[in-house]
Image (cartoon, rainbow, N blue to C red; front, side, top):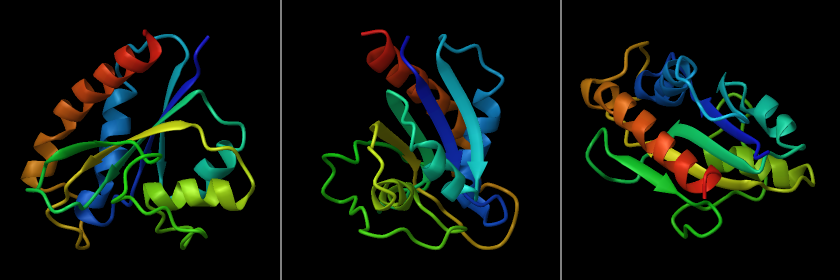
Length: 157
C-alpha cells in the first residue's frame, strides 16, 4: 500500500502564509484514496521533519511559495530537480520553516528524503492578520483539484 502524506504548513497569523493550513483543513473533509493522510502542521514544521524520519512513499507539502507570479498562482515543485528551490544546508527557525527548510531539517537529522512535491501558492499579503487575500483564498479549491491530480498520477500509476 502506498503511503502518502499531504502536509499543510504555514502561519495562520501572517495572512497568505496560512495557505497550506487552509488547504489541509479543507482537504481533510474530502474522501481520499486509501493510504493518504492529510495533516495540518501549521508552524510545527519541526514536528513534520521528525515525522519524516520514517518517510512516506510520497510527501506533498502545501505552502505559500513566493516565486514572482501573480498572487494566487499555483505551482507544483519537485524539490529534487527545481534549481530555483535552494534547500538550505541547515534548518531555519523552527517556527518559520518553509517547505525547503523542512526538507533541510530531515537531511540535517540524517534522514532520507521522500519523493516529494510542493504545491505552492503565490502570496499577496504576508502581513499580520488571519485572513487569506482574495486571490489566495480563490486558489484553495484549485489546489485541492491539483493535489487530487497528483495523487492520481503518483499513487494510481
